[in-house]
Image (cartoon, rainbow, N blue to C red; front, side, top):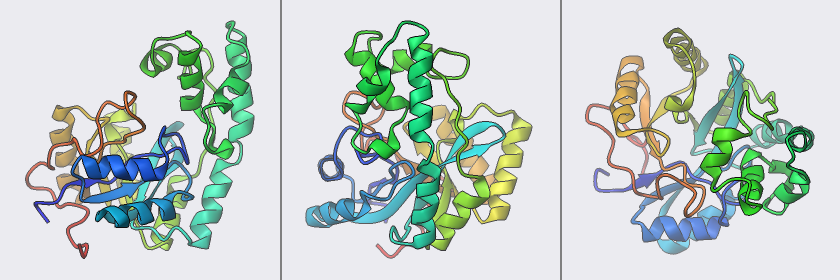
Length: 280
């Protein structure tokens, strides 16, 4: 397995990615990925298509999802790997999590209108593959298209984040619910890109402790959201807490993602990969 290339976190246009699942699979395969998971936000509607495309290309496929969670007044993402996408509790839980996105989107549009950006809701909808999953990313793409910003990074530097125009918070699932849904669907719960969260050291400790007590098993170590220095930082967290280590590009689309599918280096030494006991 040490010779295999893994990418266990990416997105399609079933949530907020640019490409359909089949094209994401083709790009992963072209980049040398052997074991791949599509982990769309709060939605498993693309998993069957991803599996079919991966199998046709000779890749191993892992059923996946990324669940939005509110913890300590911030949004945290929990990836589920090897989930059964037909599990009723998972499907129903994700549907409940998605509820409220339209209301939030209309509120975002209203906030943007206050600073002279009109028609943002209708503009964002043009970039949405699944209207139930309209998100800040779709607003960002609309704002780039209309010339308000040069790229989506500039959008998020100036809009749509806490303290900036267009920011509207949303209450997601709880940490306990996300882990329960993933484990109930036969999956492994993974804290996605921990380096992105703005917590104190004490808060991080509480997050990791609670996650482990709930049955969470892994954290992402190598991810497109981490710097190379953070690979080792979170490898040490994995060692300290006994977490398995996962990795994934968090690819959303060409020209929009910091790291392409399959472009991450191998995991640091001394961690146990999340796939250590998978039959591959």
